[in-house]
Image (cartoon, rainbow over all chains, first blue to last red):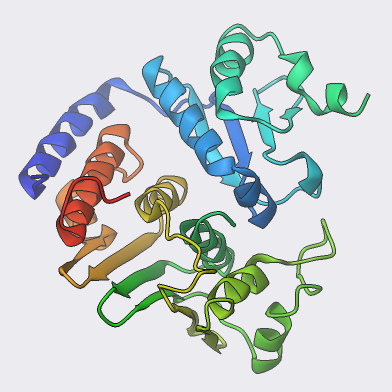
Length: 124
Length: 185
């Protein structure tokens, strides 16, 4: 059974970790479109896939995953925008959970945009 | 929407945009009485009576990025197509409550789906807001209240990965109890 005692242990561990960590101003941002259109197109598993992949690689301090609204290109949902400080924003379209590990590995870790998944590739 | 839990995520997003600090989500279902009722209630900015009429119209939206607003209409449709009902009660500066009631055994009933995942994502993406989630079945009921968790956490954020994992495991466990087994989905 999940108990509050267990939650207290998590709290104590998190507090200990907090001293080692600092707010990271250079954190990259993953924005998953989660308006009606995004949700209907399957954005929820995509967001979960990003969170899992980033946790698996121990990058939770360097990358934040969050939701955003509709940016007006509903036909391309699920849409994911990636913002890395100092670099141009990249918009990935029709993202499926299977594409997520490659985006995390190539783009977020190694800074190579996965061109074939971007909106630029789709519109050609 | 493939699952009602996705409709819930969608309308809860409206509460986020209404600058609510507390969102209460309740799911009440009974095979005995053949109904399922979902209500999403917030303490956000609320709406005037005219605005309530407008959000039911698919061709109304406050957004400028597109011309349609389908969140509420789709939620309403999902309930009405089962012979159920849909209602929005709102008071300006006080908050809004959206209630959808379904006839569970109806052929057009959309499955509830992974409502726990919806709750987890809402907490994860809005760690500064509070959520109260209650799920009731014929077998019992449970509640997750982030205000209670916050008391225990003493400043540790709700979106800390270990905390989210605890929340997720807690929801799974409690769901199994109120569905009377492990393979509830």
